[in-house]
Image (spheres, rainbow, N blue to C red):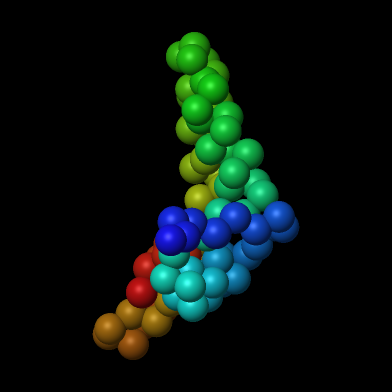
Length: 81
């Protein structure tokens, strides 16, 4: 059983969303994996803050415009349906 898919490339938010929908599994690209590794190894307060800042910046770049139920565009995370 596969729990997640790791892609050795930098993916856009739309690519991540489409792959997650097709495979019904979380997809992590190269930068996402690097950020997860930094988060796991951040022990000092400063390191944790730097890792969190990098994670937020990465997540912000992965937001995609989606059409809401009211017919207006809004921003959603790549994994949202």
